Length: 216
Image (cartoon, rainbow, N blue to C red):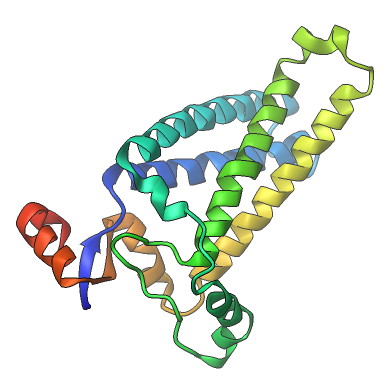
């Protein structure tokens, strides 16, 4: 195996990541305003910005799902138990002892087992839950007559609970960026697209011949 700098995150993937981050931050900010945690926006503007950001994020997710399916990058999120316990032990204990991260990124799998499971759960459970409950809230007038009076309150509470779960994911995600390597080393791959990856001789030969711009 050879350690090389490889294009792991394509231009669209980086655009999707940073745009999603901005929209989620806007949704959290306006959501807190709607619930009265701050008065930096009046209620009407907060609702308008919240709704617009939500629709923008939903559209981005549609394109992202299509991109993952058509490019085959969904394979990076397939969960595996291979090495999962070692990674979990590292984050629970080893990271505080200065131990080396047990997982090395590969060309065919850029996420460690714990990341893959976390991102998959985010995409399969939390994201669908937040946009389904959000759409139900937004389209309440279309189904209000067929639902009990307290239904909207339950939808609102569920939507808020999922939003707090996503907030926790964001906090943990940012925290982990400050561990191990420097913050810059963690963030730069999502800016430049390149990261250090262990390649087999076949992968290295393929990239140098067919994708020379994707390897350094």
